[in-house]
Length: 417
Image (cartoon, rainbow, N blue to C red; front, side, top):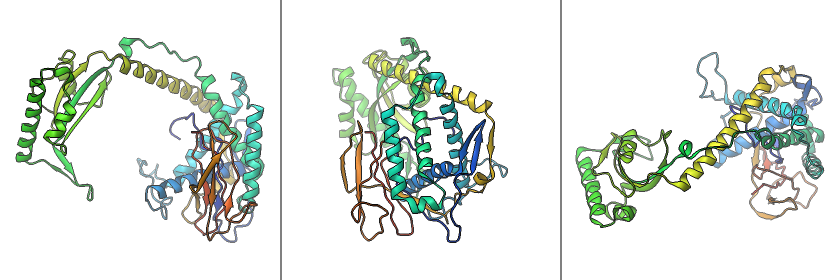
């Protein structure tokens, strides 16, 4: 992963996952060491579970967006900048999971520095989830070398990542002045001078006649606001919609001294105004025509929101810096079993999110999802076609799992709301 995250790969979620294991591969020995982080060893079973879970989650996401995952993992990763950096999406996923594992192990190792331990109640939930998940998927998990203890360790690592965040950022400077966070709020109306065909993705420039029409419309809108008798409270959005509800977009926008989104021409015009004034002219940025009204040169509410954003960013940077220092100082060794793991399109891992029904969980802020399958072989001790195993979650999506082979193995999960 490019940056360390408070929410981890699994959170406290275990998805039921059925692995499509190539015939003849035989059972994998998950007790072998996959990665070594300083003096800590990560077993192949734990590493495999984390890797296949992420592979399954990504595959499901692709399917939800209507993207084919049939050849996804073998494709070249688009972020590669040179032939030396060239890798497949499968390679990139594997590297990402390795980074997460390393970070999580280091967070666990430093937990005592912050007096962080997993509460007994949460540890019990983790144990129950690991046990239930393993029992309902035992045959396939055994084939890929994943044991109940491996699932438990994956959940514990993920839990430490979440529990460590707040203590690690407790020393963050949360003092933010009004000057640092000052936000102004404007109302603007604009018309795009380019058009993009949604079916082809092709972008074309507005014709001269169209530009003349757009300019005329915005000048008319400007005149209506000025003639309203109350420029500060004139309903620009309704006026704009009445003039042209297709091309004119009208909304409010808050900005500060660090704004890089709004064109500088618009910001310069806005900064020349006092509260309730509208800029006397149409602003041409090349891509758009704009009208702009200054609503509040100092917006207290927007400024308070910006303060919280600044504090949040400071906390993230503080956390990232600490974890990065541990990573930089660590010795990480990839052992042979890890090197042999591949993420390919022929060895498929997918998940299917349950949607048939939901029921309350004893876990605060969570809901248990139950799935019903038709025409599939369900690896479960519950009644045929019904999945009822639940797991605690603190920030991951609820899911069940299935493979592309047509045999379904599913576990429902609790997901924090």
